[in-house]
Length: 284
Ligand SMILES: [Fe+2]
Ligand SMILES: [Fe+2]
Image 1 (tube, rainbow, N blue to C red):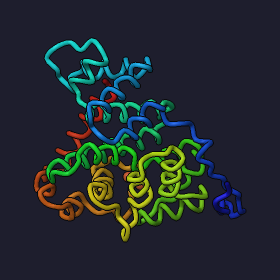
Image 2: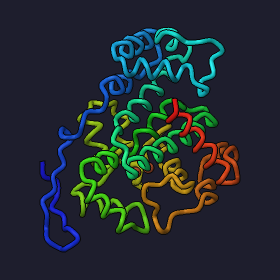
Image 3: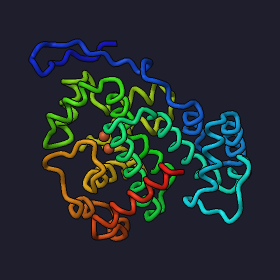
């Protein structure tokens, strides 16, 4: 599918292709976990059985269940035991986070910064949701997935994306425009088409497609993703920092209550808390 005719740096036109089917598939277990929306006992058992069918995921879940990240008082020796102790929502988040981490196996510095940005955004969105009594697990997953389109662009068009970064921009809209010119598609459009190609729940369509749209922010819990993405950027977890990006204090002031007053006033404090959480996830 040809989506656009761009213009390369030298000025000559180039035909650019975006084919979501050419993107390496997201791990099947993580996709199934994303499609299991409810937290019923049946879903927990279903998720547990999916994990047990995959050696790499089984090992990862056991390592996480026995890591200081979780700190259960006893040794966890089976996936079923880990599933019962973690509960559906937490198990699902672990599977999705681990799924994204395995997906990005060829960590280049650029892909690694995409990963750190996604986890930072997920942690901020989860905390904000918890303080507002919204669905914190959905907020976390939405944060993890919101920039999946950019991960895909970086993976399949590394040179074109390096030029997007080199060019930079004052506003997110400038960066999206550069992506369209240099990659033939922007990361919001790419994310939307991946969510459709992977048959993920519709809620993720608006998150991937609209998180930089000032007019069309996604509704409900998903509305926490755009400010969380911006806050993650301001804390140093940016893939590309816009030249006129708002400061930590300015972004925080725009956060809804009570989240606004629960985040530390000092950006360095929150950045260090998030860096520690990322380190714990990576070492688990
Ligand atoms: Fe984005
Ligand atoms: Fe983002």
